[in-house]
Image 1 (cartoon, one colour):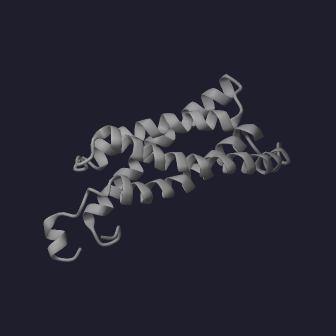
Image 2 (tube, rainbow, N blue to C red):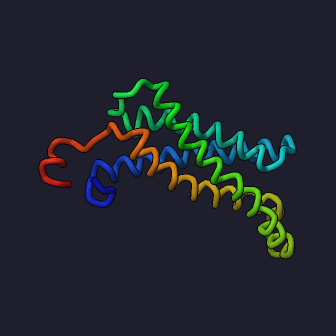
Length: 161
């Protein structure tokens, strides 16, 4: 089973990406609310926003992307999903911590050319990089561990697709 040859897997991948895009909206929205309205540091706000996005993503993936993934109890599957995403947090936090300062310095050095504040741009670009990297981790590990009970359809197995 590969993502490139199975239509069903491509569809799942696209649904996972759509769910992830919605989760990114949740993630960015909560992060911006917490950092800009409540002046919370980026690592703390990014961790809270990540948990909110993961909760949303689990529900959407369980019931839309992988509706045929029902061999596991939802609570067990949620624990697996959160374990994968906890590892994602461990990938994400160093990215947020170490990438923001140089980006802030870069954007602050060109205030005349940037329409938005350097801090806003640095925080959001840092989060975008982290989200992209962690999204790839999440898809592959969740597909082949959390949702490994979802197989190919019988015709795809017979024809080797």
